[in-house]
Image 1 (tube, rainbow, N blue to C red):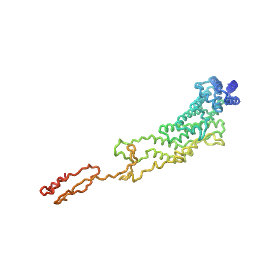
Image 2 (tube, helix red, strand yellow):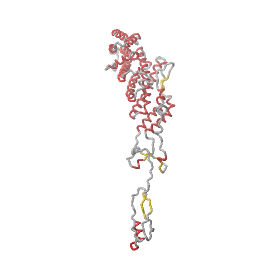
Image 3 (spheres, one colour):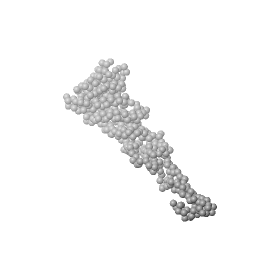
Image 4 (cartoon, rainbow, N blue to C red):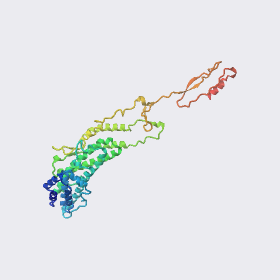
Length: 443
């Protein structure tokens, strides 16, 4: 059976400048789909053909490998991913014929994409273009850490695909056209997975830490740029005769969405420089919406107003009777929880303002306790009872003189002291004069 696969591989990689024959490709697909057949021998044969000096043979070998990756059993690409190196054609050049110069450029780009596709499969442990899609799919069920690790890998593979960068005038033979058609199929499947990962990332954005928000914003910005490049790639596909019902229509997400993500990150990066070194008078500060609850509430309210625009955001829309891939059309539903539209409403008890009876201070200002200097949340004014001292009323004496006292208030905060009292005697000879009493009292 190994010789049968070798024969089919040799038939698919002849030196005729035409695309590999469908019969040989079908035989190879049947071979690798057999669970008891080893794909290692087939991979060795095709790798050997890729080391030829003829651009025709090399290009057809690459197209054959790519065809098996797309249409064959996943264990074939898993085997290629397990190899230390796949194609080393970054310096390939066929100078034997004039067409070889132009085709050698595309061979180098094409081999790089196949290497990246194989490497992505190794790093992600599966072919993302064949992964399950939808709400229960691989990209929609990843957590934040997995998304931040896997989305850059998909971006690199997507960059390598778009870097093929062929114009309609350059797709002049059946081999390069066959390669372009395979890239077209991969672009739709890869973008669908890429897009679902972005949806999941946006859904988690407002619950991320600042460092994660930075990475996510960078990933989303690059995603928008790649969406524009994909639209140009699809225009070429339309010009070379690919049926329009298979070509999706792309629209960009509203600019306000990107601005909203930037504003949220900026709110996390704000540094509160208004706090001075702690003093008692600094324990009270005017209330500002500079706490996580207030910021989250403000963000959700802002994005609720944006919701009507988000409905028109970037999407791969249906053309004809076929839905090729889904894009950002699902963004409003995905963001619903974070925009206070669906299942995660704002907790009004967290953002309830303190009652005026608790915080009114003369002058009409509302005050809140500085959370950096005290564990309490509201400063309450407490009336302090006045400190009393005992002072004898002047001129209130009789023959049987006894001390007479009245209550006098001391200002709040003044040190407590007892006013010196005169000595009063009942014997007339020892009685203190009025002049001496007043002088002592004044002291």
